[in-house]
Amino acid sequence: MSKRIGMEIAMAAAEAVALCRPDVIAAYPITPNTHIPEHLADIVADGHLDCEYIAVESEHSALSACTGASAAGARVFTATSSQGLLYMYEIVPVVPSMRLPVVMCLGNRAISGPINIWNDHSDYMCVRDLGWIAMFASNGQETIDMCVQAFKIAEHADVMLPILVNLDGFQLTHVVEAMMMPSQEEVDKFLPPRKPYAAIHPDNVVSMGTLGLPDIYNEAKKANDEALINSKKVILEVWKEWEKMFGRKYEPIMSYKAKDADVLMLTMGSMGETAQVAIDELRKEGFKAGLLDLKLYRPFPADELKKALKGIKNLIVIDRAVMSGGAAAPVCAEVKSVMYDEPTRPVITNDIIGLGGRDVRVEDFKKIFKKAAKAKPERAYEIYGVRG
Image (cartoon, rainbow, N blue to C red):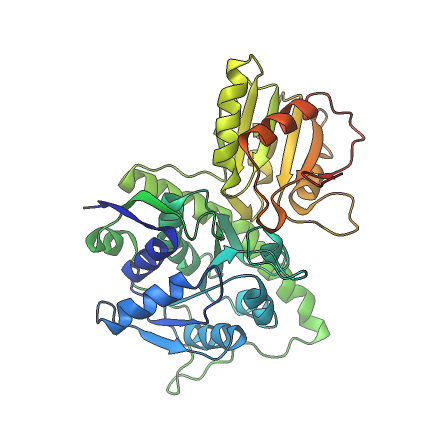
């Protein structure tokens, strides 16, 4: 039976991963995600988890070790942040191309430069198009749940793709919250042992990750893209099973007071809960504000977005990364692309907030809402909070 705990979210994530009985963990510590691999190392060292923990010399080696272990049929986990993810970059696209179900927790942190250890989503945006499923947690409970869900989704025979579980650095990783932790019995019931489609073994020789000549490269990339798009069906099935077993509902886009809203805000990650407080205060003032919270970023939930925006007058898309030189920031660019062919669509404004861990308060969200209500269709994106 699940038990109520009060714990730092990063350590709770490690506990949840341990309940999934990974065979191999390879990770290199990096702020603000150090506590996940550190706590997992303690769990293994104390004999609570029968697992091969590989203390590698770099993040590049961490993902390389995970790639080999997963190819051999192991259930595999790693974790990193920011510059660590960039150090892995050479291997990141290899994992989905080999259809390996590696699970990674990414403690989102701004990339350099200037050097910054605080939160935004610029690290994830560097790898968003490399074939990994990506989920974003808003709080500690979602972090725990997504860590367990990720293994079942990734290892499904119709998916066989790696997953990034994103949790905002410091704003989630280092925060202590009350959460429900599933029991080992519950996780064992929900998550069966991995059964690999194919595995490297000296007694059963197979080839993986071989050369893709021009006459097959197009087909290989198409197959990968189709697998990622089609994974949404399995994701929804797993989320339904989770809801039935644990009572907590997950959808690609969750909503808050959105049904009668005149102005909606789309967020991703921990900022959504602060926006909810702003929405409550605006509602008391007679301003009909609402929230859409993006839980699934890859594959992008285009159909769900179109449905959620039907009849909406104004939409604010919140980004926590800059697409330098672009016409919009990353999330907003995708929203506009999805809505381009819709016969009616809201006026879409784009605010980039919280870069490098900059505080964004309830009052800031209220100002963004009120400004968006008066916005014109041609308004470009704006980096909110820049001192003038």
